[in-house]
Amino acid sequence: MFSRKLPTESDNWIKPLLHKSQKAKEFAYCPYSKFRVGAALVAHDGTVFTGCNVENACYNLGLCAERTAITKAVSEGYRSFKAIAIASDMEEEFISTCGGCRQFMREFSGKWSVFMTKPDGSYIDMLVEDLLPVSFCTDDLKKKKASSGST
Image (tube, rainbow, N blue to C red):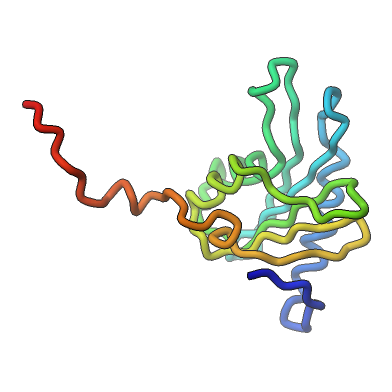
């Protein structure tokens, strides 16, 4: 389901991506939770978009780092991604993405990597589809629906 592997030579893009997610958390605006999160998203062409969490006094209007990075990418015309790295200050646990962000990522495919990290650079690599099994996606909107019986 997930791997804790050492990068190989062909994975030479992973360490810089992890580093960018760590740097992104430095810009977090989190005056309420004091919980900094950074994300670095890489598209298939190698373009990287970073994001951080942005809190709001009206708590539900805050943005997670993952959604910030994805929204930046989509606003630049990107729709297909290779991986996202997520960073926090938690030393003993790997940072995990919230359920809302899992669904947000799933919108753009379940077949891309999520690197959940620790500040020491270690990480767990999982696919979006493994983080959100039996998920609702755009394909579900195309499936045949029962008729409502109303005219």
